[in-house]
Image (cartoon, rainbow, N blue to C red):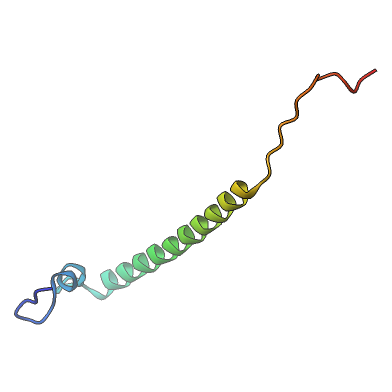
Length: 74
């Protein structure tokens, strides 16, 4: 990665907070970032549960019962 004159790479420059950010804006930005991290973790948990459900479904034994539908009734 190439670095600029101030020693920051392009990613660091793109994700750095604005130079003229107020303390209120900073608090709001940090809160939004924390909410985004929390949502990302929730999505990861949902994906893991979904993968486990698919794995259980694929291991299930499927039975096809053939025959007359009213054979057990008198």
